[in-house]
Image (cartoon, rainbow, N blue to C red; front, side, top):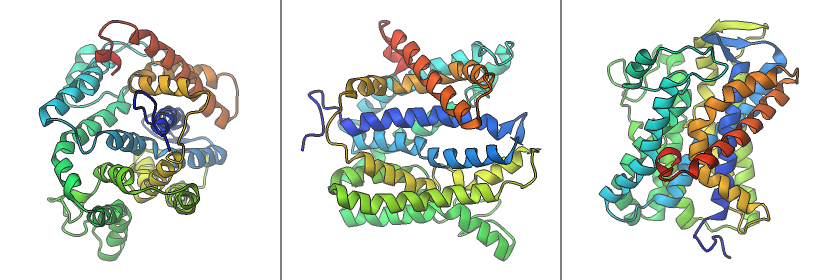
Amino acid sequence: MKTTDANNRVYFLDYLRVVACFMVILVHCIEPFYLGDGGTVIASKSDALWVTTINSLLRICVPLFVMISSYLLVPIAGSTEQFYRRRVERVALPFIIWSLLYALIPAWGSGGEIDILSNLKVLTFNFLPLSGHLWFVYMMLGVYLIMPVISPWLERVSARGERIFLALWILATAVPFIRELGESVRGSEGIWGEASWNEFGTLYYVSGFIGYVVAAHYIRKYVDWGISKTLVVALPMLLVGYAITAIPFYNAIPTSYPIHESIDLAIDMELSWSFASLGAALQTLAVFLLFRIIKRPCKAYPLFAEISKLSYGIYLAHMFVLVPVFGWVKSWGLTTPLVMLTSALLTMCITALLIKLISIVPKSRYIVG
């Protein structure tokens, strides 16, 4: 059955890219309901429930972007030099431009004054507080660096060989939980070779986002299931993954409200929320498989395809829009979930329009990707 258009666009990936982009924005609209003033701030039990319920599913947003790119790119075509040059032009240069913009321009509604010299010094080594979402690009650039290295292996390895790797990777996604268990048993959180002076444990090299790269390749090459089998496999996987993600997070929240604690509490709460943890991995694989059921475009596909093409630019720019929009929407007196969803939707729409206008400018691919 046909799955692409005349321009070789993969329909389900366009839908999935738009959904993942909206999820990222929604994550950032949820954060103010449990993070604030440099610490952990939760106003009520209701807010805690909404944060847990919605955000526990959204942990798939970043892994989905990794899988989408990997589905299209690995094994890489052409030379390593060509591959890297393309990634620099389409990913690294827009990233650098927007990083500088966040360093030079204060977001409307964020206070108005910025220390440009200090920002530029920080930017030399890492992202800025306002552009914290750009951590993803640093990570993605690292994934791109390794793609030419693993591509020859992916071309030669058998399906069984990929399954063995993916099984080891799934085990690695559970390491944070195993590490906590190890600490309770032996009084030290280091496991399987880890220590205060060595973070490279046994599963270190099969952990992290690289598993999503291999999973995307495996699905594209070997998984050709019908709707029934996809549902039988993916839906239980989604439910189990969600439970593994949501329950530990909620159980880590104190029961006395309002909560005003140090940032350490949020770090402990987010143990099960890591983008490369077991629950997020299971949910990501499940959702990717479910979207892959889509074999043909709907009437609204041209809109999804257009937003999909703009999605990287939307990701880069959206914090400039989100900060004032969130404050504006919150002043309306809506309930917590409506504030989250409305501010995310408005931010998505306004940023998409902004990036579309920029894309009309000549050479805009160096700005919006």
